[in-house]
Length: 348
Image (cartoon, rainbow, N blue to C red; front, side):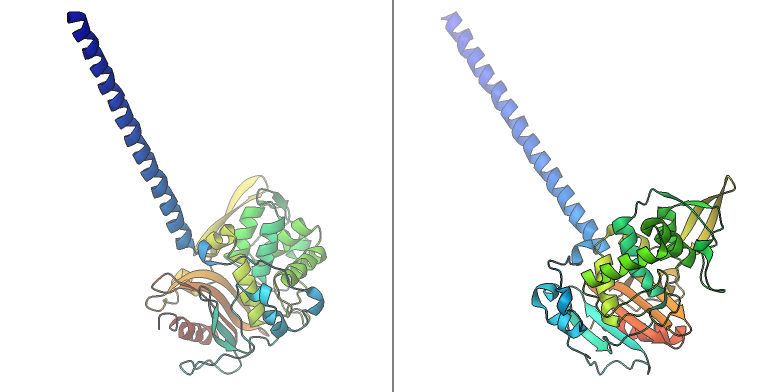
């Protein structure tokens, strides 16, 4: 009888041990599941914060043989299905944009043109050109490459915006990209184009091919920086297409938000730091953002013939994304006054 009792006791003990093991396993599975779900939700939240989940990839290419008219491009349903579209001007009686300017406001989330003034008219883009320069650099360049600056890279008109590179400087593509997008350095644009394209002309050809691929059929560029040339032009709607395309790239989004950047170059076997402020006055704090609006960044541009230009991505107080564009403003004050008018619409 005693041996039977011992056997029963061992059996009950084994059952208790197995039960404890299963409880531990089950508890561990619950903890792992909670951890995985937390990571997924955190990842989604961070993505939303950068707006990467609020931009749209293009599902179809346009038919290039029938893409002569920008309005016709927008009527090409498969291509335009995930874009803001309009046939022409979109009025808004609350806005009093300065005469001579071209401008637009795009609701990226709902895919609507909330305002549009002469969005298909050809214009000089100045350094807003560099949105497309950036796209091609990201797609076809290697940001770890080291580039040696040449005379050709510095062959620019006197007084143009440059980061301060010198012949013989050795600098990474990553540093050049930041100098291009944050400070709008024309010397950075030239060095990127020569290195990635093999020549400036080849790189510009790549830019124009990229423009056609995203439906920017009102665009023709002849350089990577935007300094004036009568054959270098685009439209407000094409700028929207380019910025919308650029926002697919996390590298672009992260870089465009920087208020400043210190570019590091190797010069005469010494390390030289070049401090660069953003050309976007919202990012530097020189221009206050309207209440309830967060300006994430974009691209500025200024020449005597292009005027003062700005294309930016913003979020309203609910985190919803908008692209706003003002081109050909007579002064910086006019530029930011009218951009503020557009931004004040996104919370209404």
